[in-house]
Length: 234
Image (tube, rainbow, N blue to C red):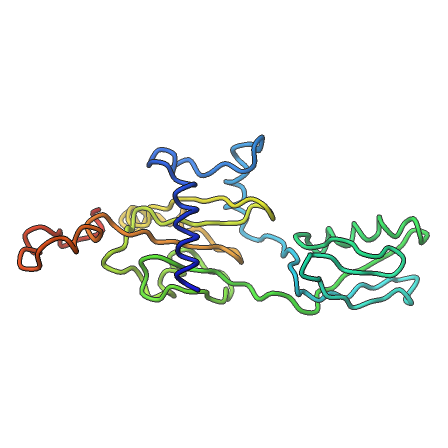
């Protein structure tokens, strides 16, 4: 499973990053999206939770309690409710779902007053892959930054490329943005303004440095003569 995730991340990395210059400018979102949109997506520290398949929500009608229901978001993203039938809610926030339901029910009810409450939902998580000691999926407990996530995954390996750590984030249900973080420079300068706070679903990928890619072709007896003592320089 982890190998598959790493391959996916590598594919995304090749699409997202074409040279250092492009990497420094963050990926753009959908065609026609202002360049500031991805940056705003990375800066949004307290995003609203968006529903996914399997979430359970309670829909309550203030004036018509006979319509009250507890429903589960189906694999296709729909829920089924009385009078309006199926309605797609996956990818929406609770506030957006509430507004949508009140709009849809306005044809059947007079000025409906609806409240929506999550009863069960996907637990927040992040994924760390690539050159870390323990790649995998981790529960996102509280406020966690990118460097803290790497530490939770056991830290960098000797093959890590500290200067080009990638953070992948869903900007919408269809688009993913990527940002390259120079963790080596950030830690050396003690400037943590780029130590991004993670959101649920974020993927951190630590690529392999160049020296580790060729090290296996160097005779072991001459390793000391060819390999830098500090792989982070690559």
